[in-house]
Image (cartoon, rainbow, N blue to C red; front, side):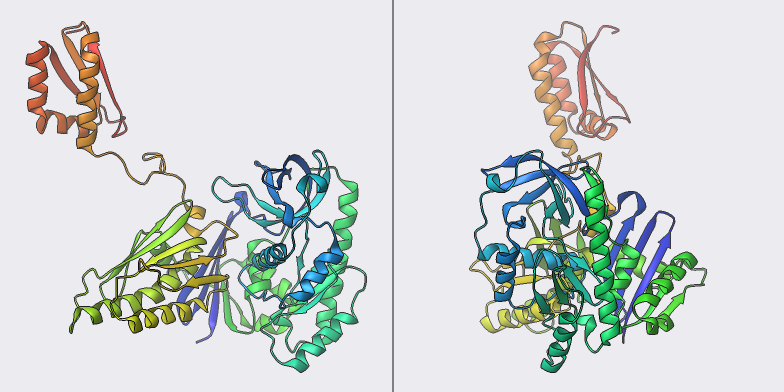
Length: 516
């Protein structure tokens, strides 16, 4: 079954789901008031240079200053181009085009020691930068001075003089043909990378793409010279058109959108790139909400859960933190039929595929630790690891996996450019303040008792009042009634416990009551 794009466009929010073989594999969300900034080009001002970190903070008109590492500074285009020639041609046909650019810059940076940050930048200096990575958590946006402008078939790199072809295009004759097209295109504006989508496309459409990017770069340069920093120079396409540019290919058999305005925008956009795709664009006209009809809403809600049930009866526990994500496998209700090792193997094999699916669906990035159930046989560990890697091949984001460690853990990384799905759709719990837990009623009760012991000698009234959350107050008066009676007899005080519905479960107040 071919892939399908399902787009839910409403006022202020656009949601895009990619279905593969009927299964939701990716979900992307963008809201009008919180648009993504990866790919945007800014004229920034250096506000602080940090020699000890070999980095600088740059004001690009956002709430927080952006972070610029020394290796992401374009100091010498010639050196950068030579390093590019030593690279294998970059594979850029992945979910977020900008993510591939970040991979390329990081690989290049690692091969050549850059100059000192204090020799390259000064406070107050104005520079042209592009956002390579969204602000995530408490970290500001990651920026680079190596500008990259993506088109449908090629990517323009104004700061280098290099021609590359996507590694996914394997036919040598086709690679030569595409290189020849680039050689005969606009000159003197930098280098180009040919995208996978360019395979077997006509010279004319590829040249049109190059000419469009050349004009765009000219407009960026002109605007840069006319405005003062900090300022936004070029805004990348919104999520709707970016998805059409990067995800709507001949491999996608159908695109369905629920908004008539979005339907018209998509058709107009496709007219400029591949008019043949217009026949695959459909306007959704059913009464049932489009994400409900395709089962996306249910899958998104499932992706918000900490526990994910497997069909066999086992389950995954997914815990995300600032540093890493851990996924733990449990047999749950699955007891198997033959022996323990077979039961564990079947659970782990199913878990491996579901792990890859959840990582892609939730857009989890960074360091990830997979805790499979322990297996005694080495060949079983090989099977599980192979299934995991096969499932990850469908992921457009860059992943690296490392075989089972001595502790029985699989460690992996997945490239992170934007916030994951949960962070995009949620905020810190005001009740637990983002901890993910609250102190138990019993713990709070004993805290109250200890506080009474500390303060009772300073209270000269006959009555002591304790205000607490209703659940805590009830626990005190029932389960800890003996403790309350002991205090009253020992200190000859009347202790009154009162509940307040407005109190946090961990909140309480103790004071002498003169009204008694």
